[in-house]
Image (cartoon, rainbow, N blue to C red; front, side, top):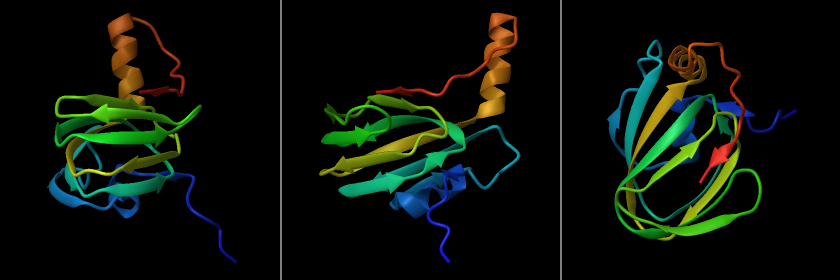
Length: 133
């Protein structure tokens, strides 16, 4: 009996759902609260479970229409070099883009972000899950 797809993936699992040419990868250093992966993507349609870390995506090169759905309505917009996306951990997502792009993923551990944000605000913080487009 199949258990279906996982409800949450680790940063190391991301290439399973969004394969591309990896040119930088620090996700194997699992003890670090922050890791990075650089990826060159061909046009793609990706469906992925939520990731166990917050994800900051820096678009390094390419320009394409990006259509994505996390929570709420589907959003489409032109992305280009220098644009940034932020995705909260634990959110399943679907992404479609017709052009080649190169991105840098920055994965930030949930506990580390909560710790740093709490230190900056000088109090314990409760993190909410949301998506920023």
